Amino acid sequence: MAAVKNVVAGAVLRQVRSLFSASASSHFTTVPIARKIHTREVKKFYKNARIAQSNGLFEINLDKRKLRTPLGNLFQVDNESLALAVATEWNAQEDTIKQHNMYLTTLCNTVIDNPMQRTKEDLTKAVLHFLETDTLCYRMLDPPDLITFQQTHWDPLVDWFRSR
Image 1: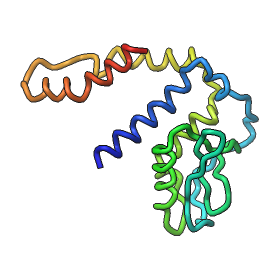
Image 2: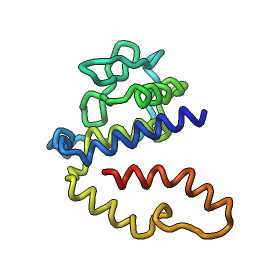
Image 3: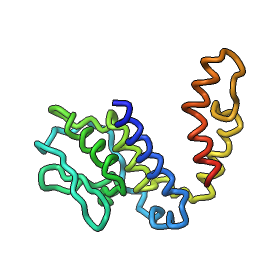
Image 4: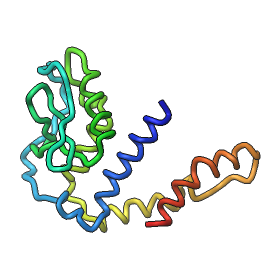
């Protein structure tokens, strides 16, 4: 289970990181504000959510319908593990679709739609604000078990950011 969480976490990080990449401009499209994002529950209209690969990206199919984001964009991610995790969220829905409980779907929709029209610079400023107090940047010196935990679990993340 931990391995699956690590794979999914890595996939989500890559998807979010794509917002910061040089090619991120493709994520930032102008969309009409008139289209509202609803959080109401909808009756489940499909039996199975499955993934399909198309042009090197992974899509979610609800029976034979392609999943779309709240702003109407085709739901596509570049990682199979992330697509499987999103499909699992959709398959876990029972009689009604509770999108407010589908956290990976919501995160991916935000990355794909960029509803706030945020630029790379906007996102960088927002992240830098939190770094001043981020737990990863400030380490405890006691107890020894905590130091070991920090080195084991946090150092790889810090190293990843340093390499960027």
